[in-house]
Amino acid sequence: MVRKKQNLKNKKTALDFIHPLHERTFVLVKPDGLLRGLVGDILSRFEKRGLKIIALKMVWPTREHVYKHYPESEDWFSNIGSRTSEFFKEHNMRVEDHFGTKDEVRIGRKVKDWLGDYLTQGPVVAMIIQGMHAIKTVRKLVGHTYPIEALPGTIRGDFSVDTPTAANVEKRVVKNIIHASGNLKEAEHEIEHWFSPEEIYSYKRSDESTMF
Ligand code: IDP
Ligand code: MG
Image 1: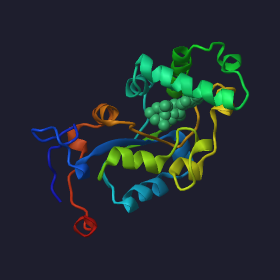
Image 2: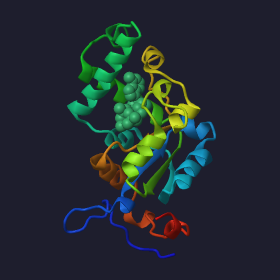
Image 3: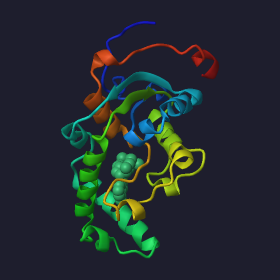
Image 4: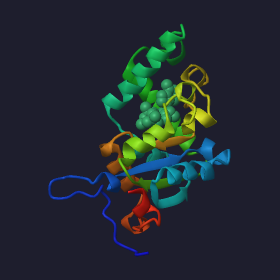
């Protein structure tokens, strides 16, 4: 095994092509996953699928670190707000009765505050996963943001059942065990935000030549 200085960004050639096997994504086991003893099971699902853990550590994050982890963009806030409003409508509830507003950006900002409260309550396990189209593959293994909607067989669908119609009424985050980068931009930012190059390792898994 070689200790190699790692490039923080997903590996790119001159043509900006990232070989699908080299793609990297960031994953965080949230406090509910850790407190429920699910870390081993979660790691094992990634490993069995043929994905490689190239960095791993336990951290007790500060609120500032959590705030900088999530985007501070109107798009991200309104995406959270509009999805929640839709979900409330489907369940014949009025989102404004619980948030005091219908404004999707303000709803998204509130959720970010709750994430600040929640992710600073205890340690989390941070990791970088590398492998075939890692960003999309990991998101598929993780499942839908709302555990109640997540399919059985996914991490959120097998281990949780929380829903925004309960979480928002109780003014807390939806407890969904795990975070995974949603796209390449998030993956690059999150990897750099949580890990230094010295903490990332390069090695060959013994089954790589059989699988690919
Ligand atoms: P993701 O984690 O599936 O990528 P995002 O939309 O990025 O989902 O939301 C970040 C996190 O915010 C979610 O994982 C969840 O814990 C929390 N969250 C999202 N929407 C709501 C909500 O309506 N109420 C409470 N928490 C929410
Ligand atoms: Mg997200």
